Length: 239
DNA sequence: AATTCCAGCAACCGCCAGAAG
DNA sequence: ACTTCTGGCGGTTGCTGGAAT
Image (cartoon, rainbow, N blue to C red; front, side, top):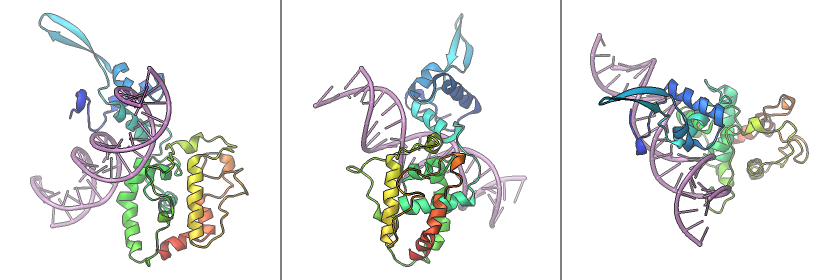
């Protein structure tokens, strides 16, 4: 196994390492990832040094960052494993049109998927699928260009991968990233000369953004709303 | 059967921002 | 005000397994 700085292990995680990490999170919760290597013990082993037999505690020799990523991208119970559905593909393509490579934002709107999953899926499947279609598109400014640029001086927006699972069922709070996306959506709509309302009800009383709440199932998804506005056709044929 | 090629994806890297001391 | 720690993000790398030759 390759070793990184400070003797940290690198490369694929073993089942044993996964188990240790999950045990740590069960006991201590998420966060303080750099403590994992110090706190966790995978077991004891006997080492003979000369005449002495020493009990050595074997910790999880992973850097905190690696532990965090392993949890976020793989071990977290909220993560959906397996193939992407047609619905998810469609949603990602639309959101990418809207947001560009803001993978965390996109993933935050695709329940159970992480930014890494979405990014990989885009790079391996969807970009190809899209590349074929793009050749057929007429020259037109990409909708994502209507969004404010990312970088310094721009309001930072972040959406943890599991945000959609943590929203209260009657959430009246409008998060910054929701506003950011709403603003972007309105920019896109404005670009195409469409009328603004993309919200289900007037105002922000009932944000429909893909909460995991059963009571919200009757509310239209972004996909449905975009369909209502014929945005899909505009994206596919207008670009 | 052996080798090469390549797609898919897990993991790493570098950078950045915010919090805490 | 400065440093250190921690977490978040997007881009990239490299391993793995299956397909092709």
